Amino acid sequence: MEPRRIVGLIVAAGSGTRIGGSIPKQFALLAGKPMICHSVEAFRSHPAITDIVVVTGAGQEAMLAEAVGPVRAVTGGATRRESVRAGLEAIDATGGADLVLIHDAARPFLTHHVIDRLINALDTDPGAIPTLPVADTLARGAEMLGETVSREGLWRVQTPQAFHFDAVLDAHRSWPAEEEATDDAQMLRRFGLGVAMVEGDIMLDKVTYPADIAAAEARHASTLVSRSATGFDVHRLEAGEELWLGGVLIPHDKGLSGHSDADVALHAITDALLGCTGEGDIGTHFPPSDPQWKGAASYKFLQHAASIIGNRGGVIDFVDLTLICEAPKIGPHRAAIRHRVAELLAIGEDQVSIKATTTERLGFTGRGEGIAAQACATVRLPVGVRA
Image 1: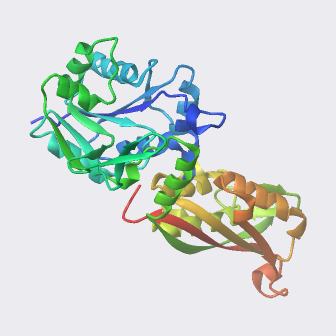
Image 2: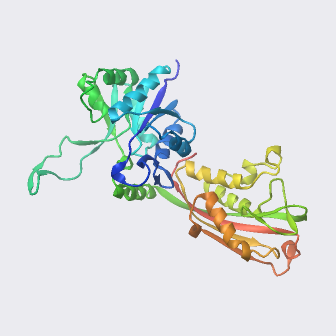
Image 3: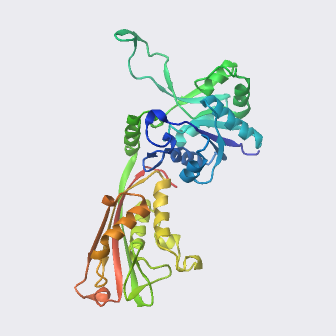
């Protein structure tokens, strides 16, 4: 039996005017990355999703590519319904699908549990939506409070909404052009098809207004646990080598020797970050026996470790680095190293500490034979989520 083709269709074609800012809200930073990234990564990391299509606004293709990397993009229309239709037609033009999950990028924190519940519901129904019960008191009124409305039987509807692909495509093609629809499930019901309800998730609340960004950040933070780990590295000083420390080229009569550029500072920070994820050490990911890393810039190692944290939805909170050497003097270069490390990790300079000390002329560092570095990193990671 051939596996089903299940496509995640992300609608991200809006201008985001209600949230303010100079860029559409789907590209605004949320929990350390553009909002659209969260939805794309949720679908990319789910084993049942075979393809992703993102419907974006005209002229937003470059922003989308910069935010999420290579992804299939379709230009949307003037309304959400037209944008969804464009995405469905694009899927149909390339072989169609068995199931499709239509999701709003403004609901960034999609979990695999919700995706699983929706896909399972489609075993018996042509459509399924995530819902939450209404908890607030409801009332009618204008300037003065009127009568209350019973909450019984009322539900908050979220996305993604999941469908048999042919059923939702037919509903869109049959929908009157002059009439709008609030969501895709409404369209299926209009044509007599059943839509199941599954348990939603408070994490899927929609980001619409400026205050919603702070609320979404707080929801995300509540799912994270803090971890700290250390890293330590040593490299020999030799004549004829360049001296790279913290991504900065330091003028000196000797440089550090190693398989890569031997940036002992970035190596120590990389190991600290990898330690927070439980992903081994720098040698696991970039073995010195592999010739492709000979002479490589160590910032690539650092950004790889940071990407593991980012792909899990984690946040780097702080990095502390101590350089141990007699020479060169680190003080004149401290600010530049701090700036470069912060830049490479895409965090603030106030989240980076650079210190230096000597060993009072004791040991190999005291004799000027090498430089050692010790780093400590603190990150927050979602519980139970792996890259």
